[in-house]
View 1 (cartoon, one colour):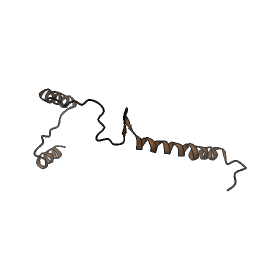
View 2 (cartoon, one colour; view 1 turned 30 degrees about the horizontal axis):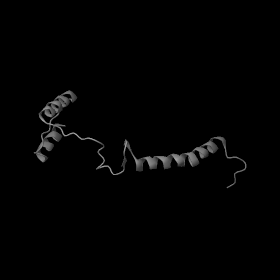
View 3 (cartoon, one colour; view 1 turned 180 degrees about the vertical axis):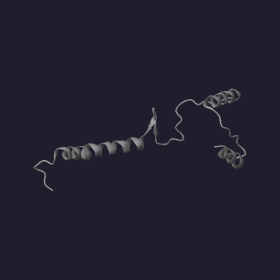
View 4 (spheres, one colour; view 1 turned 135 degrees about the vertical axis):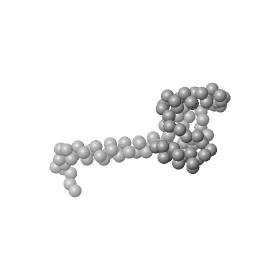
Length: 95
């Protein structure tokens, strides 16, 4: 790990790298934040998220659609076929 740290310092000299515990990291972040005024936003930050619906900030529609399609396929095909596999095919079904 020390070798990685040395390499990072050589390759990216504009940044400071160190190994620290979680407590050290949190205290440094808090210290640095007290020196800066953070920008605040009002409203929903939609500009970088084109597929984000208003009021549903944690769900993206393409992912929701894909999940619905997968669930439908499972309901229509996989679950009935697994039932047949467990119990055997009904006599009326022919290939």
